[in-house]
Image (cartoon, rainbow, N blue to C red; front, top):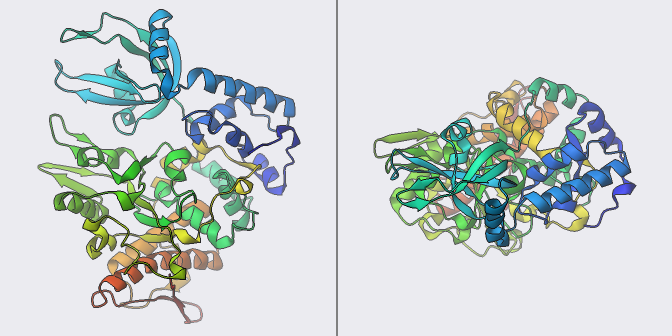
Length: 501
């Protein structure tokens, strides 16, 4: 998307964000300019932009800052085809600075155990890294961390007769240093509910005033972020391509990861039992997206049961080892039809792998079925040229503060009640978690009005009911309920929530 960086005209929402959160917001058109230049996710690019483009009203300063960031991206973030060139430059002119995704594995076969780092984008492996560095940043052992690194060359590093000369001399994660929930809530108090929703939508890079982004679509966008603020939140979204299903796991937060094709080993996901046991992604990540899940496989019943046990309890046992995690599972898949225009299968879980597509116990564990066919395809004119939060700032605030801020899921009960016996325990737990996640995103202080609570409650009921409708299609005897209701405590009026597809 071509953007004239000298023509920035802030609107009312921009001004509010600048005033309430100085230094924590940025122009999203600058991020769009850099995307595509490298494999770095948006939160890394915005971290760099935040250093050099702080004065967003000074066109000359923005231009100079953007040029500096473009230069750093070109110079320090590797391309995949530069592997041998980078290795040669490290050998000839050490040390070499890089910005890369660093992942670490423990090779227990060598002596007392040796940590090896991989520079993922540069495609350089078996890089020496100090034990204390790994202890300081334990996420290096799982999904990895984007870092500023200094790589040296030292051919005295030898193991079992082989030379491993590349050494990480210095490592500094690319992340915001400090977040404060009280300050965030104080800034939020200056916005109306709808203004705050629009601010979050712009933070994701979309323009909330585009006609395709209706109030309901905006809420569905925020539902995609719930796993980042709500522990053990599991949801499924099937829909057309190019609707932004994977954004929260690839661009928004370092605490989300996307597993392409739905393929992942059980040890990597849950826990390694060979040698020294190492917890998998469920321990280090907040949200784990399974992309193109319709093409994935669950090869063994034991593997499927591990998923089911974890989704139910938040822990999994392999042999004598039990691991507890907080990561949510999000299944994303593409379907090439709109169910409203005619079903092409018995139910909307049918596109999933055969081993789980008809498993009602597996699907009963979803807190929400997000109707992807309601989401608009992303077009250039839907991308905002205005201001949103720096992604790394909200990612850290979500992870460190809101995720551990307690459960907001029962706030609606001061105005509404659930009918006796209508919801199963899984229904109740799912509805409460969806409500809690949306409340943390939109009302981080926990303060809301009755109609605010109604809006979030009806969305939570809607998304869980979509799960129940598909379960009903699979087993009408066990899952007979096809609507949900709630009671207004003030008027005793019963409100019924229904969905078709």
